Amino acid sequence: MDEILESDGWRLSGKVSSELFRRLPSVDELLRDEAVQAAVARHGHGATVDAARSVINGLRARVTSGELNEDAIAAAVHAAPLEIEQRLRDAMAYSLRSVINATGVILHTNLGRAPLSEEALEHVREVSRGYSNLEIDLASGARGERDVIVDRLFAKLFASVGYTIATIVVNNNAAAVLLTLNALAEGGEVIVSRGELVEIGGSFRIPDVMAKSGAVLREVGTTNRTRISDYEQAINEKTKLLLRVHRSNFEITGFTEQPSLEELSALARKRKVPLMEDLGSGDIFDLRTVGVHGEPTIAASLRVGVDIVTFSGDKLLGGPQAGLIAGNPELVKKVRKNPLFRALRVDKMFYAALEATLLAYLREDYDSIPALRMMRLTEEQIGERAEHLTRKLHISTPRLNVEIVKTQSVIGGGSAPGATLPSRAVAVSSPGVSADELARQLRVRETPIIARVEDGKVLLDLRTVDPEQDEVVLRAVEQLATSN
Image (cartoon, rainbow, N blue to C red; front, side, top):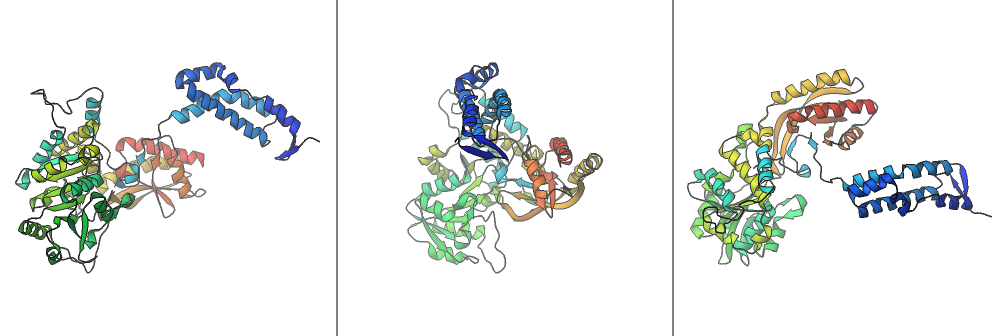
């Protein structure tokens, strides 16, 4: 007796199953189809063969499960070229996509942190579409150094420090810290307060970085209280650096004590030990102008006598991902000579984006830098856009509950912990669909919209949505109403 398979209430014998398998085309037969040949021309032979094989395997699985009868398999085979084309499009599509950030988190690490300015993007395109003078002195024709591209701009930005500083660029701030510690303190001790042995995103821990750099960690003080005397008592003939680490992503409050940078600088000069500060986010723009306090600026640290600072390019600076090392020219020169520097340096695209960003600072054109523009938006400005959107949505989406709510935006990226910026959000909810499901539907759109869910509502904080994207958000919410 033939083997009997059961599926969805109907029975399929082994003989019939074999007959259906014979109706499936081979890869060669599919490749002779005119539409599939066109796919080969567009996507390449190897990729198309893989897609065809995948489609056939899928059909075999459906036959085996009893999903396809004789009529259904004929339709599936007829549709195979279209399915091959769709699989090729999916496989060849970019994985990295542009999204709309409606979370209200300005420097959202998961969404790429600081968006680049139009000037930065244009400069990247200009120097990347052909050749550039990355490492040639155009006046002499001799080989140049890529560092000078931004070193001169940082020198101008930090002119108020009162002395000339030098700056070099590596691929991120973690690399900047590792490189500086290795260059200045390998084999020696680095004194750090226990309250500053931080861990940031991606399990980046100061003790681990210290060990990898070859320097020896010398902890002083306690988690909540460290005095200048703790540093002084720990200095010995093995001490190579005093290190201050900015607590960029958390706060310690209550019964606390921490020596000022002025005190540490005075001690460093007295004992002839360099003082290094890891600023993390790296603020050139004075955040006090937007109501955020407690975030130190790079210039202020250098001004009080910090010898060398490290900071990020894609956080408060508002530029590309980069790690900046700035300060005493002799110390920076020593860091630059370290063999690790070449392994960690950045390419022409990063320099171009960073140069354009720094020039905007020199012009004091802060609104041209997207992250700074978002920080400078007032609650009233955001509210006007929210009102415009909700008026349209009340007309076009009566099935959804749409309202304006007061909310708080954050800077993010481990910057200014605890600081918030008053904002307005468009809140969307549905009687029959959960907020999590609505948020998911926004995420899986062709242009994904990333929102946050609070109190059973989807919140679209317009602080982090470019005004040019408002219409895209409007259409997306309208389609939520029609699809649910």
